[in-house]
Image 1 (cartoon, rainbow, N blue to C red):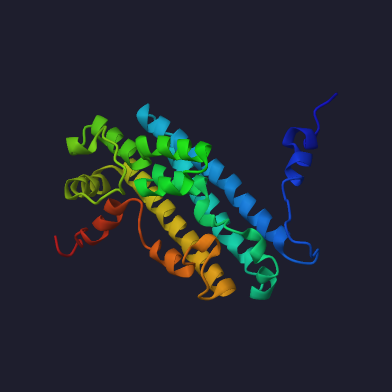
Image 2 (cartoon, one colour):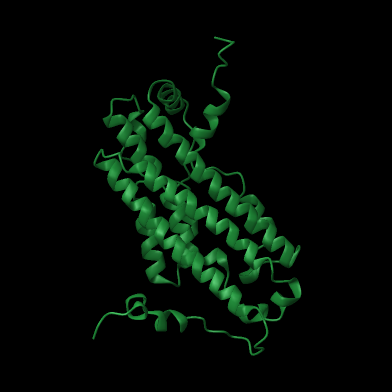
Length: 266
């Protein structure tokens, strides 16, 4: 039997995964499920791209890195716009099926936690959320113990002859990336002298900004739908989401913005 479009993409299986728990056919639960399933598929792709980036940096091959970074940034542009679709759901539409979600919450997306970890925003305490989900707990424990994308970039810079502090190399932590003045000095030198690496740094900033834009749209969508109500699964809703805003994955790349010297000052 010849391979078909539906067979290759397993469309029948895909379309069977939207298991509605409410019984009113005219509600928006289907939209809610599809949007969030699409997010999870895109998270899978972004994790795949970042793993390739880490491999390329380890191999010293930076020729394909700008393309990969651009792809990730473009994906997050799409993800931010997906909230626009969900915002067509009114508060009343959501309340028609919200109770069916039970304790389920986007806070429990293990792939997004993986994404945070691999980008350097590691918090060991997040593992407790997945103590009753052994496969997710195992994946996150592994991510926590592995170098982040930023770690891989610093190792590459060190191999290229830049004076990266040795205590920042080959050592993984279970805490968020902290800014480092010595690394910022290296980055300022890169911006002055190496256009290729400068463009990679700027692409990392693009991704950081893109994820912050996605978070902001998420906050406004929840605010628009729930107001000040607690989130599903017992989270604090918009209060928690607001706390996630403006926390960069690559703080050194943001810190150097105020350190550039104006040409008229030099």
